[in-house]
Image (cartoon, one colour):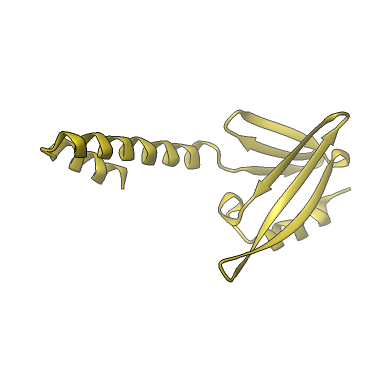
Length: 118
């Protein structure tokens, strides 16, 4: 998709169109890079969970994480997300992972996480 936008940008004769198409091309390239380099978002082992973000990977020990399945209803459609509530002393952070982030249904991931949790 970004390649198509790039070609249209190059062959466009209107300067305003070139600017907008150039911006759209950069946004699509950035989103594609994000989806490529941050995968997989969630890794699990005996010591806990590892969540990958743009700022790096964060190791979350099992005893500091609460795993929840959240269901939200928007536009008449119910969507499930996986919520990882991490608390370490005064520091806390909420990671919300969608089916797109997980690559599968969050219900299945929650079941696996509860089975693996010591």
